[in-house]
Image 1 (tube, rainbow, N blue to C red):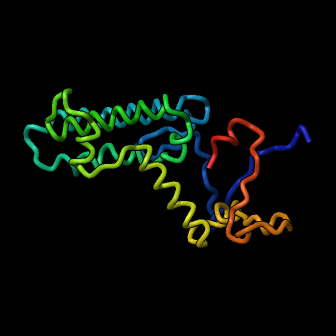
Image 2 (image 1 turned 120 degrees about the horizontal axis):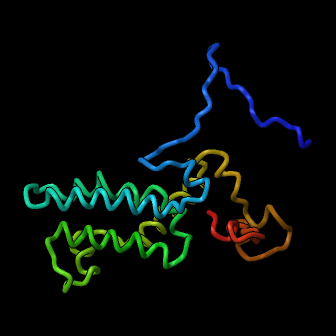
Image 3 (image 1 turned 135 degrees about the vertical axis):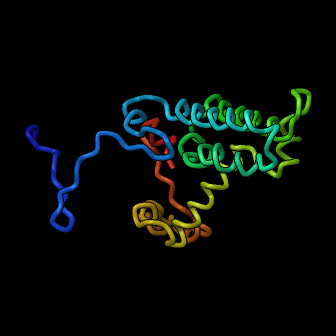
Length: 186
């Protein structure tokens, strides 16, 4: 078993696919994230770069919200199910960036509370956005609108045991995680 080779070739239409050494999506190098570089650090750097661009053009441009939605917001939303479970300290870093974006776009000074700015812009805080995204993903999985790998994760309580509990056919069974990574997973 120790000599098992995990290398294999994939062939599509008589052409072999090349193995990738790195994979970038939304400008984030996922192999670096896999090797231990914190994903929040990479997300923060990318979002900060977008905020720097907004700061440069804010006096000359009237479509700052559109620029924010194109350059910064995707980094907050893309991995919200990952960073949303990393604890308060880590997610506060990203929330501070969203607060900074709100101040830049509204030309507000530091005396104005960020909750008022977010409310005026019609934005939810990142924690709420993350919760909404998780709820949408769960709904899609329960309605069989997501890939089978997600749909198969969820089981009703009645399918796991035969105890006659109230509403057991509607309740989801949540297995107890054995590891810290399991506790923080979707």
